[in-house]
Each structure stands twice: as C-alpha cells, then as structure tokens.
Length: 72
Image 1 (cartoon, rainbow, N blue to C red):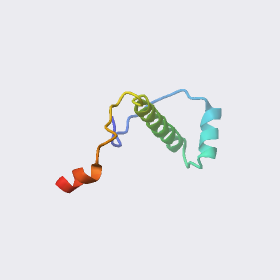
Image 2: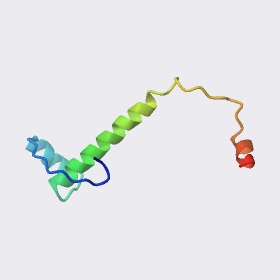
Image 3: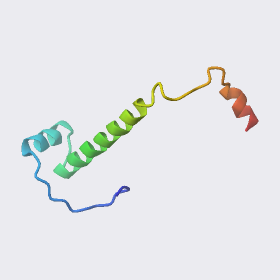
C-alpha cells in the first residue's frame, strides 16, 4: 500500500506526542506529522537493512569502474 494510497484509520495515539511532532516539524496537520513520522521510520529501517550488509558483501579491490564504463 504505497504510492499515495489513502486508507481511513482510527488510531489511539498519544496526543502529547502528536502535538509535539506537529510543533517541532512545523506541520500544518496531525496527518502531515504522522505521515512524516512513518516515512522517516521506513527510511530508518531501510538504512538499517543496508548497514547489516557491511562485512557480508564481497568486493574486488582491483575492480576498475572506469574501464568497465569504457566498454559500455
């Protein structure tokens, strides 16, 4: 459910946290604050997945990317 799909959702959220997020983020609405928070959370999780690859991906120190480009 990505790409701007809108789903009506009723959530019981901590109003103090919502007010703080709206104020700190200079959001015009609670929805905007929650949407930004979810977007940031998703990006954070995606970055964690990438970080977990460190030390697990083999690479060639002698790889010449410039030479590879010349072949294309």
